[in-house]
Amino acid sequence: MKNATGRLATGIALALALTTLPALASMNLALDKGCLSCHGSPPRGKAPTIAQLADRYVPLKGQEDQIAGKIGHLREHHLFGGVPAHERLSAEEAERFVRWLVDGGR
Image (cartoon, rainbow, N blue to C red; front, side, top):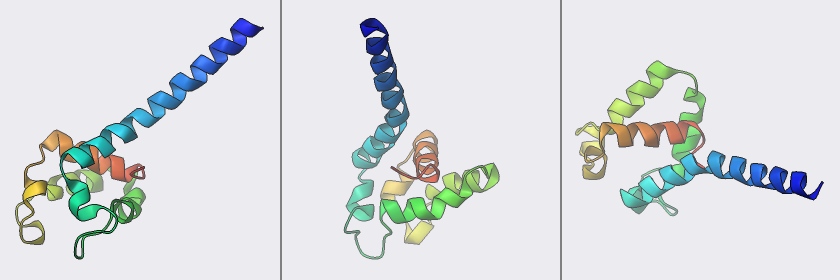
C-alpha cells in the first residue's frame, strides 16, 4: 500500500510539473524578451498587461486562422508605430507567446 501511494504521489507531481512547464516556459520567454517592461503590472503607457492580452486572446482558442493571424501580426514592424521587441521575436517565439496567451497566459 505504501509503495502504491508513493507511486501515485510521484505520478501526481509529474503530471503537475508537465502541465505547468509550458506556462513557465512562456513566462520565462516573456521575461527574457522584456515583454513585462511594457506589459507588466503596472503597464507602460497604454500597453495592455499580460492578463489583459490573455483575456483578449482566450476567445481565439480553436480558431487556427485567427491565431495564425495574431502570430504574424505580432512581429510586423508597423504595429503601434514599430515595437523593436516585437520585431526581434522569431516566428517560433511569437507562436509560443500567442499560443500561451490563447491558453490563458498563466
